[in-house]
Image (cartoon, rainbow, N blue to C red):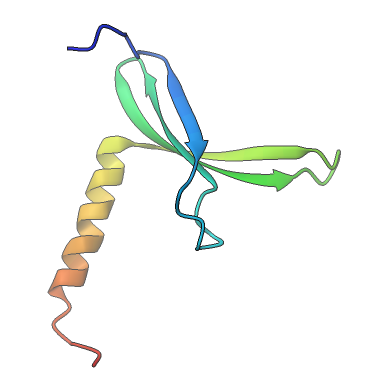
Length: 83
């Protein structure tokens, strides 16, 4: 058991996967009231102030894992080999 209580805390860091231009530039985690979330962020420039801004996407870890499992299942169901 961790000595540090991470309830209502989170962290975000620069992504290692930068080869895809649509991939988030920053990723991390967040805990809100005991529920874990996955965070993704993209750095953009505000049109109004021309200042850098981070745009976030937050998704429950349970929903993220379910969506990922579905994608893997769909890939495994595809019996047609392209080569």
